[in-house]
Length: 66
Image (tube, rainbow, N blue to C red):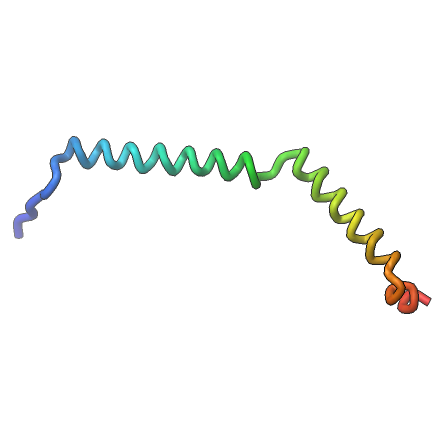
């Protein structure tokens, strides 16, 4: 069984290199925007604290606590 290549190995190498570079760049962009950082952790903690304080101020929550 003989395989016939429709693209040259050089072109395949360049395509592979471009795909890997694009994947690396996308990973960096996503990590920078959504990844774990200390600043992001502080933002999430502040959001949780605000959500908890908002829940307690709601009249229906006051009834449930007592």
